[in-house]
Length: 476
Ligand code: NAD
Image 1 (cartoon, helix red, strand yellow):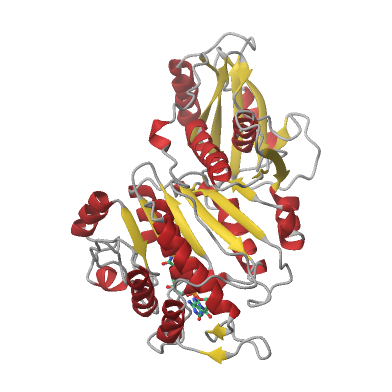
Image 2 (image 1 turned 30 degrees about the vertical axis):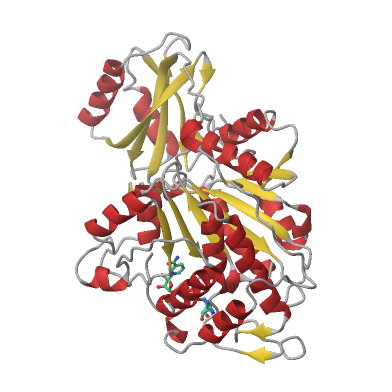
């Protein structure tokens, strides 16, 4: 457990008091993370001793922390997710209407977000003076794991439907494989409905008609965005809890940050962390205690005992601070909500064991059919570049297309296309069918370099069992 920064210590104190009063069976180790550790010169914000504790105890209840600006401090959340292998981020977004204001009183959505891959791999490069790149990496096993987790979660939690959000109309390979794996795994869960949506219209629907969704599974960046959209429309950004689940370890935290402007004033709402702690109790199979706390918490909301962030004249009966809210929950332990649905978590409900899954690993034959050579070049038009390169093509290769920002600009391109200094020059095997070797690529690069061209990167063009493993340029 870590007290964190800002409002962290006070909401953690309130949460621990509730856990203890409810009789949770916990043997707590406290670790130091966050601002103090960063400012002591540790750019990761966490010490080796803390890692040792986390790897041994395997369950982490974390209060929010403050990442200092500048100075190359790394996000502790990203580091923790990656180091502990927490591949699944689970965020229930539930309405507590009319006690917490929302336009969608029936909303009850769980967002399951892939946590380790995608654009969050952090592989970014400035390649030319004008062009920057961030790599989107999607793996088959990573996709399978998160999608399987979503279906297992749905089944265990008696959910009816899993919806997949992707953008495979544009990203046919990365999002395409995610979608294909979703369809394959959905067949193994005939008891659960499965559908998919393009992320843009899906997000619009989520903001407009959230009642139509049950469980949503998606990639890292999309999940990051839609989980905030979903939390916001449920009316409860301040009271959302979340879990981050891995094969061996798990981390539980509120979705909000350290709210430094209200820190130390005993006015913060501890509910986000209390709900995260309830998720933790379910995870470590103490469902009775989890249900007891959640029901007391619901009863407290119903009684109109509210912290300032959700207090509303007419609906609330008593404005309380952080610790008084915890006292009100403690006083109601053993009671059930009277107007909202009581909760009863089942035994082993989240006993999902990803390390027992046999993931499918593709075994297709991989053949090198060409290479995209990217040039930093700023000495003329696309036709000028094409004519120069035409004279420098290796005998094993042919220059098929040059594109700029993905759009074909040579040969026979439409005039007037805006070009940057970043050119993708596609060379394919000369007869269109015989695979090439690394040596052919190296010879082509050497020729270009000897003739003054600045190549900035290459991407190899592979076929897998004869099927193209790369996209065509727009207009190719
Ligand atoms: P924030 O969530 O801390 O605050 C956003 C707004 O919500 C503020 O007005 C704040 O007062 C309010 N708020 C948040 N939690 C509340 C609560 N429990 N009760 C009542 N009101 C609450 O987001 P921010 O201001 O963007 O970030 C502040 C700091 O938190 C930054 O240093 C950021 O890096 C960090 N942060 C940490 C985490 C984490 O540790 N998981 C997550 C997000 C942000």
